[in-house]
Length: 350
Ligand code: PA5
Image (cartoon, rainbow, N blue to C red; front, side, top):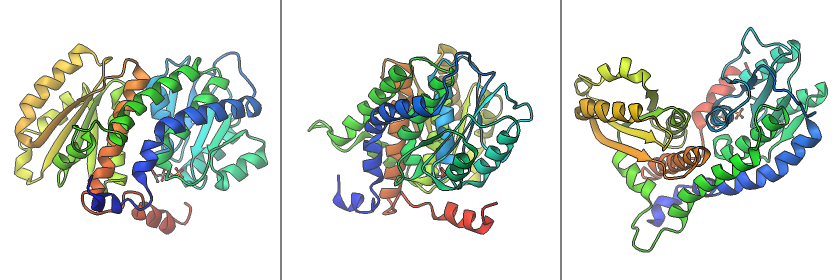
């Protein structure tokens, strides 16, 4: 790979992606121990597990819901308010990597007044302080990552908490399958075969460059499609949008009919895994055929892992690389998210 490309990666986002399998495996070891010490074990599942967190800290909840056969509904909350029905029957976990995200702090306060927060996951900040002061179990994650680059740490910690709360079981195996899926992609990018040419995600990124990327998922790959969108926004620093089958066939499909007239340059990526229902794959075939004229590039990415968690993390890791290369191809450092920091400063913690 051209050295000039990597030169822009000043905070080593590629390295952080490469560490994903290790993040998952190492964190599971530590977090399962920490959760056993901090969180009183439940025998019965709560009515629901409510996971509050924004952006890079919210994605762990989506991934948990996508990869585990949970014993109760897992409800990700991305906003200031916990749902009106939340009570002592539910377990609420608040996740904020920095510990200073206003929406998550607001949910923490509301959940505390409705019967209590079961645990928080954070590297510190106000969330850590408030939880400590209130005697709420804190699972501390190491600082130093961009929150979105700590996805392995946050997911494995969440899995440990969810197991302690009797929401999921056999989390050690699920986390290992997820790590194996991520490893498959990391290996292809860190030690490509001699004749492999450039890394596959870089090759895909070249076809997406200077286009608005649309990412479609179906079933469990929907969570990954939204992760791709967010990573292309934050790492790649370009607009991107995600939607899911079959719902998009009832609206978005029509929007592509005259899309060229807008002057926009679009590229489509569809994410498929073994679990994707045949009806959904058929929909993808017909939809992409009907909409082909609208797109400069069309990709169908199929996960090869032999488990659902493996497929989810395989597709996720590939997208993390693609989004990073989208920045590097333009000489931009993928790590800083200046606009988010400026917005948070202007809001002054509100
Ligand atoms: O990736 C990012 O930097 C953001 O999406 C953050 O995760 C988001 O703003 C929430 O912050 P935190 O993860 O610290 O709660």
